[in-house]
Length: 407
Ligand SMILES: *Cc1c(COP(=O)(O)O)cnc(C)c1O
Image (cartoon, rainbow, N blue to C red; front, side, top):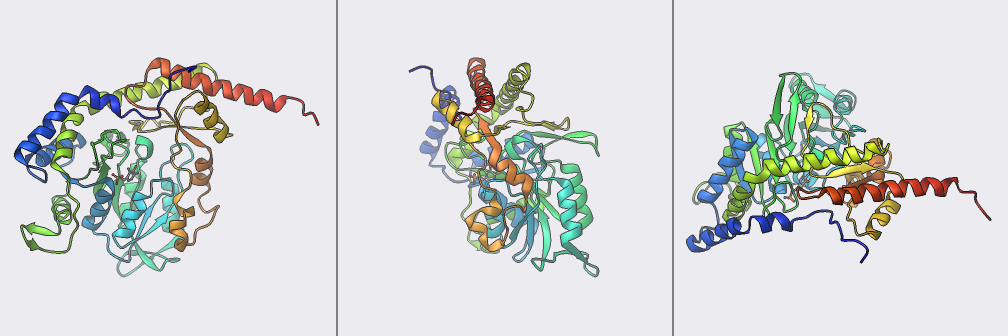
C-alpha cells in the first residue's frame, strides 16, 4: 500500500488509553448490579454540571431525549411552533415534533453556519404577528404560536447567543440550546463581558454523548443542563415514566434514563475532555497554518473572536466537492459531509411545504462542505498529508481548467 490510511474519526485510541479505568467501571457495575441510576449517574451529573457551569445536569438516554425533554420541561406545548436551523442533524427537529410542536426554520450565517440572528429577527417581525392582548407571537403561515428557539452550536462552535437571547426576550420565547456537538465550547457575551460555556446560556440545553461526540459514551447517552431547578425536576420525571417517587406518576413520561455504566464511563472521560478539546483546537490551528502558508486562505473555517470552538468537526468549503472527496479517498483519507441535505428538503418534512431556495445559505453550504479528519490524536504528519492532498487537487483542477480543449 502506498500510504497508511487516515481515518475521519478515531474512536479506538481514547478507549485503549483509558482501558483499565473503563473496565473498572464495568466491573463495579457487574459486582453491584447497579445498572440504572445510583451514585455513578448522580456523580456524573454533578461533574458535568460543574464542567458547564450550570446549577443542574440530568443524565438521559440520548441527545435526542435531551432535546425532547428540555423542550417539554421548559414549557413547549403541543401545537406550538419551535424555530431552529435547516442545517442540523434531524434529531433536533425530531425532538421538536415529538414534543408535539412544529419545527420551522431560519437560515444560517454564511461564515459560521450557525443561526443568523438577523434572519431570526426578520422571521419574527415579517412572518409573525404579535397578539396584542396576550403578547403571544403567531406565525401567520402556520397559524400557530411560536414559543421557542433552538440554536444549534454546530461543529462545536457556539451560535451568536447575545442577539438570539435579546430577540427571545423581546418576543417572549424560550431558548433551548442544542449543544450536542459543543461540549466545552465557549461564547464571549459582549453584553455581559464574560465567557460562557455552551449549555449555560439558554433556559435549558441538550448534550449528546453518542460515541463520536467530543465526550462520547460506549453506547447511547445524553444530558440536559439548566440553571432552572424546576426544569431539572421535570426532566428527572420525564426520563423516568413521569414518576415523582416510585410508582407515583404525576404524568406520563418516557423511558429515557442514563445507564449507570455509561455514566461511569463518561466520568472517566470527562476528566480528559479539556485536554482533548485543546488538542482539537491545536489541530485546527495547525490546519489553518498549513492552508494559509500555501495561500489557501479560503479553506480554514471562520472562528469569530467571541467564539472558542471545540471543533467537533473541521469543515471546509470547496468547489467540486465530490471530486475532492474521491481524491482523498484514493489515498485512504476519510472525509464526511455534515449534512448533505438540509432538513427542509428531506422527504420526512414534505408536509412542511418547503422548497429549494427557501434557505439559500444553508442549501449552498450543503452542496460545498466537506469535513476533514479531526480527533485529538490526529498527528502533524497526518495533517500534512491531508492538506497536501487538497492543495495538489486544487492545483491540478486549475491546470485542467486552463488546458486547451481538443475536439
Ligand atoms: C448527535 C446530535 C443529536 C442527537 O444525539 P443522539 O445522542 O444521537 O440522540 C442532536 N443534535 C445534534 C446537533 C447532534 O449532533
